Image 1 (tube, helix red, strand yellow):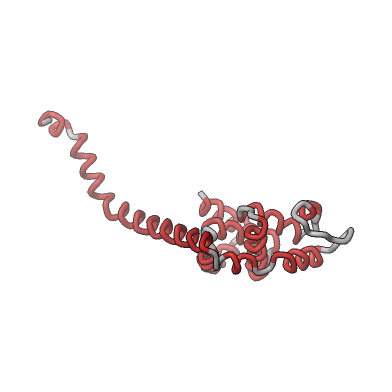
Image 2 (cartoon, helix red, strand yellow; image 1 turned 90 degrees about the vertical axis):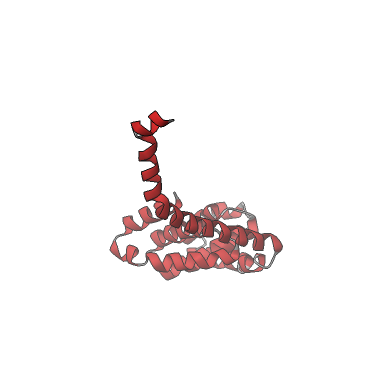
Length: 175
């Protein structure tokens, strides 16, 4: 589901975004070490890319979203929402998480305040037992998905033949 959402976001952005698909997936894979699901991270980067139109900026903002997620115990999607709003100059919701800003702060000032307050939190949290266990769990889940997909592909002809055999009236007569 997450990957379908990811691809849908990129398709709305055109060919250049689709050309950057693998780069986004590589960045998302790197986030697993920080205890973030690679599919969730792919969607986060794609949303930030859609909001900014710049992949480098989107990747940097995703790092900020991961920092914010760890610092405030938010899921990555919620943190991404806040970062998108911050990059658009919308600071009201940031007051709820303790960011003090001057009235009419620019998007640059808002993002700088977020970076100053929460920068490095994801990397610091990655050193903790809980986040290391999350990263291990994500890695194991990804491995199961890969192996499962390969097994399903390999077993599909057998399953089709077995199903045909089971549905054959002659088989039913013998049992």
